[in-house]
Image (cartoon, rainbow, N blue to C red; front, side):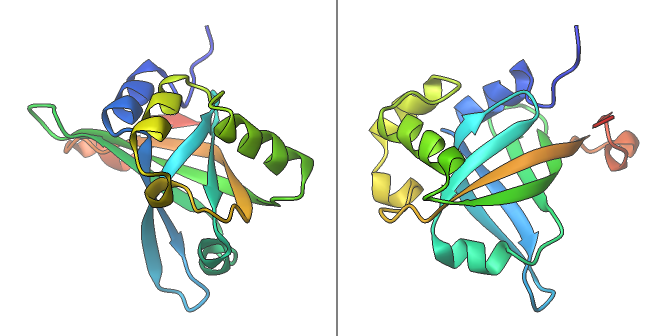
Length: 158
C-alpha cells in the first residue's frame, strides 16, 4: 500500500480540530502570515479551502504554503506540518464550482467535515462571498513532535 500524506492519523487530528488547520504563507512584503482555514476537501495528497479575495491577495506571491495541525488532546505535543505548492482557482472555474458545490450540498470528503460545517456559524469558517478555491498540493510532511528527527521530512513527494 502506498503511503498517503493525508493518512488516518492526520484525518483524526483534522476531526479533533473540527476541520480547521493553520495555513502559513509569505506576503508580498516578505513577512510571514498564518490564518486558520476550514478544509473543504481532503485527498491523499491535497487539501482544498474556500477563501475570500482578501486572503488570496495576501498569499498570491508566496512560493508555497505551510499547513499545521496539532493533536491538542494528546499527553505530549503531536502534530504535522505540511509543505505545499498551491493553485488558486477563481470561483467561476469548473474546479472551484465543483468544490463549492460539494461544500454547499454537504458532500465534502471526508464526510465528518459536513457535520462541522453544519455545527459552526458559516460566517466564521467560510466566507459568504466565495471568491476562490485554493488547492494545496502537498510536497513534504513533517512531524512536529519535539525530537531530533522532527527537522527532517517524514514523507516527500516523489
